[in-house]
Image 1: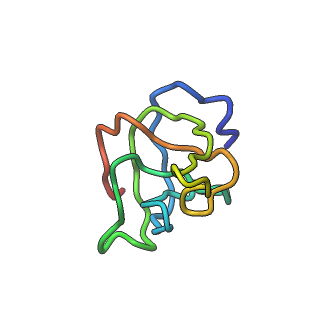
Image 2: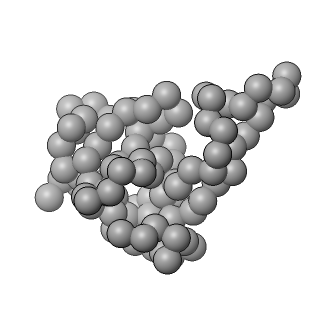
Length: 90
């Protein structure tokens, strides 16, 4: 799936749930780039399971803390699902 084609669109992403330093992510089926789920700090029992998450896909630049270092060591833009309306297991 070419995520860039869907930027700014409301989509349902199907993939595997994982936890990362900066929060919960979904790795899309057939892909390798994680997509962060806004306002979800971590998955619980869903880790490693298939999930579907519906939200608006955005590409978010890295953020720096006030003292300069990049937050959570993220040095490039990341995909984020915002305005999430549904999280489910297929």
